[in-house]
Picture 1 (tube, rainbow, N blue to C red):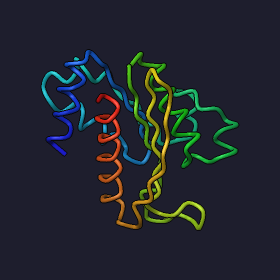
Picture 2 (cartoon, rainbow, N blue to C red):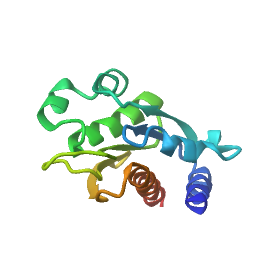
Picture 3 (cartoon, rainbow, N blue to C red):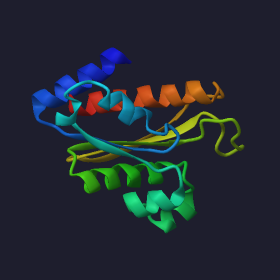
Length: 156
């Protein structure tokens, strides 16, 4: 993970790109990874930890309709979170994460399911990864690492 975050920061700096994050189940782990290197403020503008639906709505402009129709753990919400973080910060690229780290889950949204969004000038992409019931800490770390990988791919 250390090498991954350094590559993100180096490439973003070289390309003059600024980044942001919007997190739910990872609780700020992406922002922590991107901000723990000296000088990272030249690239990482900041992040939002929006665990509650009300903060998703108030800080990231996720609509009540999208939340009610799809639930917080969904690609439409991940899309809206990434777009909201990009709009609120002016970042070139924003990544979002919303999921069920566990314990628990349901038949339709099992433990370990995480939805990701990535918004940049070319649009917004989403995907869902089922990490499985690895336990809360391992799901959160896997989601953080996957989000960082998405950022690196988007930077190019």
